[in-house]
Image (cartoon, rainbow, N blue to C red; front, side, top):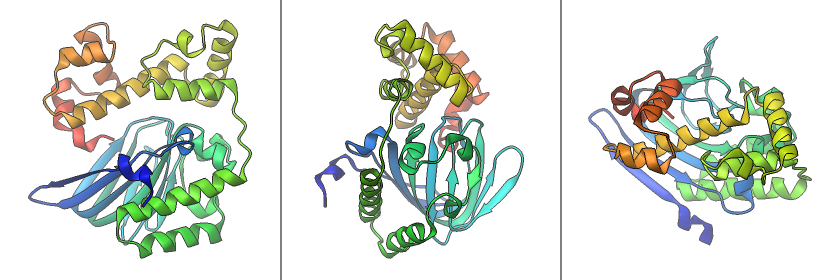
Length: 280
């Protein structure tokens, strides 16, 4: 097994209605410029629902003997084999019942488009992977994944595939996309002028790029990223030290933190804590 699996972490948790395993694997260099992480979920879920907050990432999900029901605010979708949940601008709700097994790749903003040459405007809704990827290639990857029972082996298959894809494409990265990568790597906390090396022209290019491609200001994207990492931090510690969070995430004060929680979830902090595991 490659040394890169040193970063592998696994979380097992049990309740009176379900037993499941969840594993997450951060990608090594150079794939970490395009992919946030890979993840694996398996278990008897009972009836479970999740909400994915907007993050402008793209998920490629492989399903095995699993039926997933998704809702994008306009219509419902039943998914059996796999799905591309692309470039999320709006909250996405999904539900599953009974046995679930899935392995997914969560691409950073523009990571999928750079690797597979698909314009981001084509990734704004739920897509069948065979509508975007070559059917034979997708079928072969799915078959190889289904033949392995260990999450680490599934991750190894996907990592090798992505490295092969990366080796075959010519990556063209603009100043604006590099700035997006820096915003992502600094969790939305670093000031934008520092991200842009204090260059007014680079800052204007980033603003124009975000408005044209994301339809939001770069400052708002930074806020989204900061909240995403805040959410993960609180998930890891269900009894958070709010004052430490205010300082660590550079909020002005506790009221500022509360406003951000309400803005992104519609919930006050106590309700957010009670529903923390149903929000992704």
